[in-house]
Amino acid sequence: MVEKLFLKAVKEYSLIQPNDNILVAFSGGPDSVVLTSLLLKFKKSLKINKIALAHLNHSLREESDKDEEFCVNFAKKLNVEIFTKKTDVKKIAKENKISVEEAGRQERYKFFNEVMEKENFNKLATAHHLSDLIETMVLWFIQGNKNGLKGFKPKEGNLIRPLYFIKKEELLDYCKANSLEYVVDKSNFDKRYLRNKVRLDLIPIAKSINHSLEDSLLRLSYFQTIDDEFLDLYSEEVFSKIRKKEHLDLEDLNSYPDAVKYRVIKKWLYENYEVHLSYENLLKLLKMLKSGGTKTMFLEKDIKLIKEYNKLTVSRIKEVEKFSKEYKLKIGQSIFIDEAGITLTAFKPEELDLERVKKSSCIECFNVDSDEFTVRFRKEGDRFVPFGRKNEKKLKDVFIDLKIPKNMRKSIPLLVFNDKILWIVGYKRSAYYPVEEDSKNIVCFKVKEEQSCS
View 1 (spheres, rainbow, N blue to C red):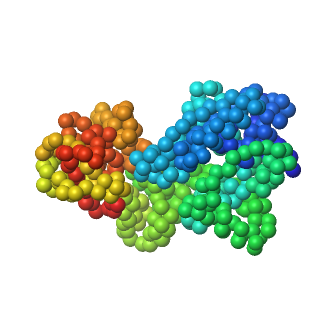
View 2: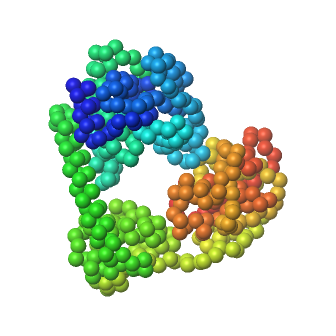
């Protein structure tokens, strides 16, 4: 059954073409072990040119090195090339102020893409299966994410999921029947992670109510996907007819259903202002469109959406073309930075709780012997060394990594000393002047702003 379902997915979604070079995202778990075994078994009949494995050691568990060793030996036994890399995911998550799960996902795909580009692979095969699809749909459903309710697709660009129709228990049975060895990731049973709670607690309850849960949600995913694809395509056609950079004509737009209206406005706002609308704002927006007269709605700190009868426009609260002003900040002083709407204070701490400082995006400390610092805004050619890194990056690229909207970047203050950017205020500190336990010249900076800062 597993082999039939594998071949069904490959054929139905045209996942594999003759002469493909396929890189397998290999963890050493039962899913990736089965995927590799199936690809190798049908390599000749599917006319696959090359198959290789890629394993990223996340350094998250005591067994991480042993898992990597298993993967290397597994590849060696099958005479398959394997690419490995070791990274500190916890450290990366902390530096970038993101979850360990998200950091792990980003590092994995970064590594896979590097290998694919360097070694000339044109497909990346992951071991996502039907049970993963169900988990994903339930996970996003309980978090209120409409797009996530579709789950993932069997094919997205050069990424393929040949196990799309296969359940987890079927993969485990296949391993047992074919004496396939694999490693077990104990973190998959840690209920501190939301996905694990969904898999271990919610899914069993749902399956006790609907014994055909996987089949039911697979159908739901299919119809949700084709419905969205049609609406997105249709909305694109509508957008091309009424698009204007300065405004949207509501007289035309209001003749369409709400499902089309919100898609068109979302696209218009993103293309022209790089603004993403939350579902909450979408609901407010649709309600506003039905009201008469002039209405306004704040989208971001400096962006306001204005509905004037049959016209929708965007206004910036502070339309400043160039942020050339500089501020001087001395220890013991506080300055109000009008362009950003924040107050920045410099002080020497009597006692320093390093752990508290590390967790806060409002306070940063440096071991620097100086009484005066500069606060300015971005300039052409600015470069920045992120904490934990040695090499400079373009400040523009750092802003992109931090997902800071383009329209906000020019108003973000930069703390500077000796022409070095110490802190993108409220977002990320640099690698310069790190504070150690025995540091003698510690200076801290605290930001207080209108928006939240934790």
